[in-house]
Length: 139
Image (cartoon, rainbow, N blue to C red; front, top):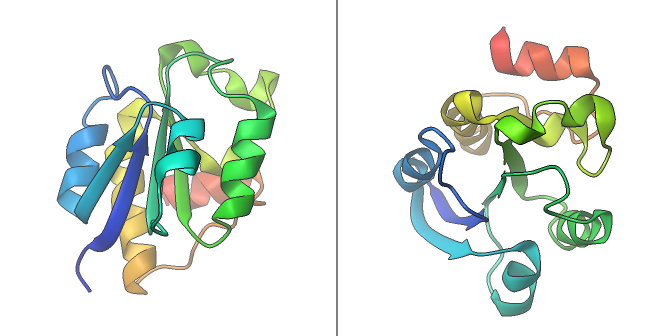
C-alpha cells in the first residue's frame, strides 16, 4: 500500500508550512475538521493518520486530546504546532511529546509516518522519551 487510505486534518493549516500538501500527497482520502470535537462527533470511519494543527497553546483541552487518543489508539497521530506553540513540550503536557512536531518539520514527519504505515520503519510510541523522538525525526 503506497498511501494512507484515510487521513484526517483537524484544525487550521494556515501557516503550517506544507502540512496540508504533505497530507494530500500521502493519503488517498482526506477529511478535514475544524476541531477535535467536530472530528469525533461527525466521523464514522477509522482514520489511518490524524494530523492536528495547533495554532496556539490552549487551542485544545486535555479532555479533547485524551478522547481523541483513546478513541483511536492505533492511528498514527501527529500534532503540528505553529510558532506560538514552540515551547509546549516544556510548558504544557496536553499532548504526549512524541506527537508534537514543529510546522517546519511536519512534511518530513508525515513521510516518516507513511514509512511506518508501509512497514518500512519502526513506529515511534506515544510514550517515547525526547531522545527517542529526536532519533525518530533526525537520525
